[in-house]
Image (cartoon, rainbow, N blue to C red; front, top):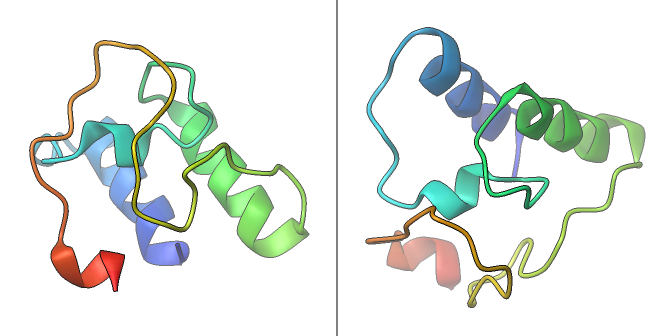
Length: 80
């Protein structure tokens, strides 16, 4: 997780970049939606030391929250 992830979320929301292969990774606040609060929470977590990120934040694993977001693939390198 870094500033590039904040940027990716914003590009997806406001510039119409491609839908991520793992939508769940963009749902930082685990609300079941990808929206502006996801980028704000991630930025706050990275730079303010606040806003904890729900599990499985920072690791590979199943999202325990049921929602309509998908995760068709996730880079293997991110799980190392």
